[in-house]
Image 1 (cartoon, rainbow, N blue to C red):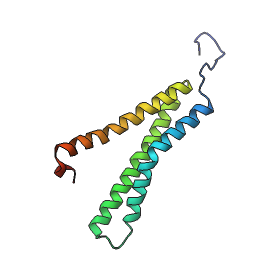
Image 2: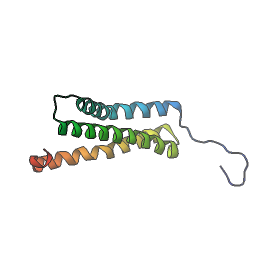
Image 3: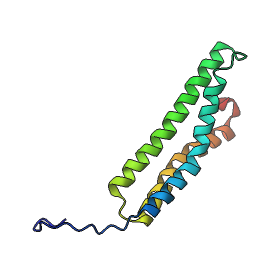
Image 4: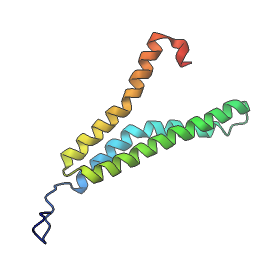
Length: 119
């Protein structure tokens, strides 16, 4: 809004279609982690596993689900704050998802260097 005017015009072209594409993109990418975390939490309830393993499964699953849902939340807040067009919201989403993927590349590199470090 101009400082010398009482009238404010919204010049952004972010539509519901952009938010729908954002939702589909984020859900498609993050669903794997939510499902994996949920499976870990489910396995933590099985009495056939030793107590130590069950605790590790629960903490790992809870951590994975929490981080994934937090990433979705932060991406939503970030895009709501700065995205002004459908192109911007999609570009921001892809950038955030790429940054989140970097940890997988680092893990693969560490595993290639020495497999014992990742066991």
